[in-house]
Image (tube, rainbow, N blue to C red; front, side):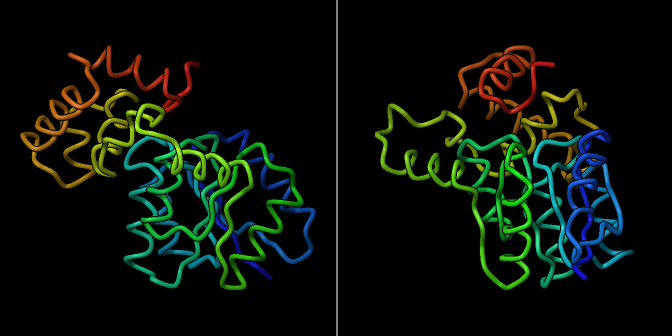
Length: 213
């Protein structure tokens, strides 16, 4: 039996995903988490065989949660299940140690295939994500997303800013000084051509970093 932890900040999505996974006779959902921090704690307590991880969540988010989980358990297997299929999100999750990256819109059969392939020691990237990655690698610089200018840490800080987290919250979650968080904020402004948090949030919505809703 493959013991799975579901990580997503939307309870309704977790419920639907749990129902889909229940159709497989060899997969058991042993726990759920709604944030990156909770995912790290639940992994430590439950030692799941595999983690299905969302990218964009409150707190440290899926990329940093993946790093922390793999630091405490290098043998853990993580598959990102997310609506964020544009580069640099897939590359950042894979660089963090995730073994798979699939779209939330994928059919159940593909989800089962991804889980079983990763459990067998392979990587799995869904076809739509793989195609976008291939296109981004062969396209000229004029077609590249401005998000590719950002480091993984800058992406993380941006996501936390645009989801309404203050400097002290970000500082506490990422173990950074408030001054360092402010430095990241102004670096983001400069790289992305914005001048304040409101413009940064509008940028994030336009580039599907966060949902407009």
